Length: 128
Image (tube, rainbow, N blue to C red; front, side, top):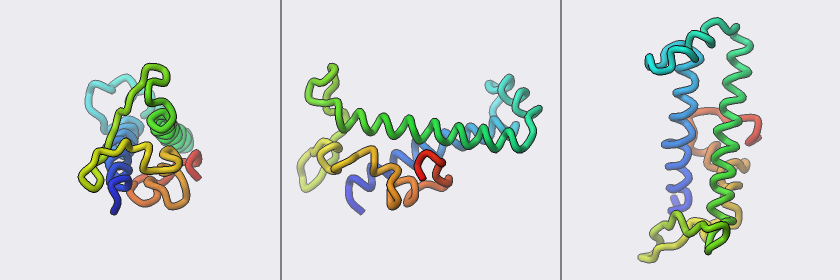
């Protein structure tokens, strides 16, 4: 597995999937007490509405990650005050993650992308 794939696995396993798991807990009524108001609302929601809400949540997560990766790729080297945020160690050198891909955001959602390869949660309709 390449360093870029290791980065993608980290994005999916430590950012995408856990967020969706927490949202499912809220919708199912099994989340921590701090989400009590949301849980009370969603417990009164019928199953078909919960499924729609889960899909919307998954789409929002995927779109957020897509645009974050897009920003890493396109807004660096002083653009909009940004800088190289993430570098990966490759061959003893630190290489900006955006230089390891010809389309960093696409790595997340293409047909052989990080979501399909590393996620325990199905892709959202946004990424299909």
